[in-house]
Image (cartoon, rainbow, N blue to C red; front, side, top):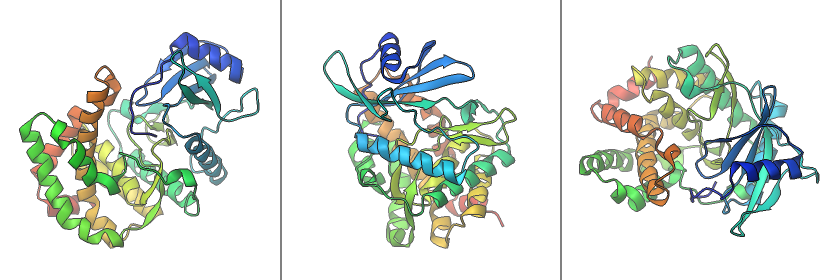
Length: 337
């Protein structure tokens, strides 16, 4: 996924017509949320698909890379459900469409996976959180030998680029007290993470298991699937559970306990190494800081896109909560016993 967040210029009627022409899809069309791509739900319950029109700067090779990953995860049975791409009437997984302004966009169709988003589950039980961690570990294990040229790209949403993100966008955070909070965590990151970077394993990871990308069953205790591989990247392995743990802490009572359950699930399936365990707290704090700074940048580009700021209030509350806890105590809470 590119750094640009300006959405493609297609309305619901245009999307429906393109989906019918290129993918033989019929039925009601509804626009879904999207950060940088347009997503449309097409069809009736039990036979629904998601028609996706990619940002103009998205490389088709990255979409092809994602499709290879979907097939790999399906073979490994990482999730109960995995969305593999539907061929067009031309026998292609990725087609090209042109907007009214003459801009070319890649488009594709994925089956709609039934389930509720993690954001819709109020009380996150330890059983669910452990299953999230375990499934992400299975995903990363399934990709251990995977590589693709499209993964060699720059991306704002990569933690090994976190300090550059702060340098570029921290000044866009309007509140000086908030900038000081970011400075506090940046200082700890520089002191503890930078000297130990070489001890961290690297891997291809999903890189965005947020509350809108994890689907769970009706009981709220089991993962159905993880969606949206647009931020997939080769980076530090530990970032996979860190990102998921960060999001399950948002708006939750006893957030460190929530994160600990998810980390336990990941560690059971794919054990974390000592340096990774010791740096999880710093990475969680830095993920929150970079999210806030990137949000400030994206809102400046597209102030009317409400989806961009969906987690920002909760992120600030969590960052303040973590600022007031001794880092050693936080690490002990994340990995008890």
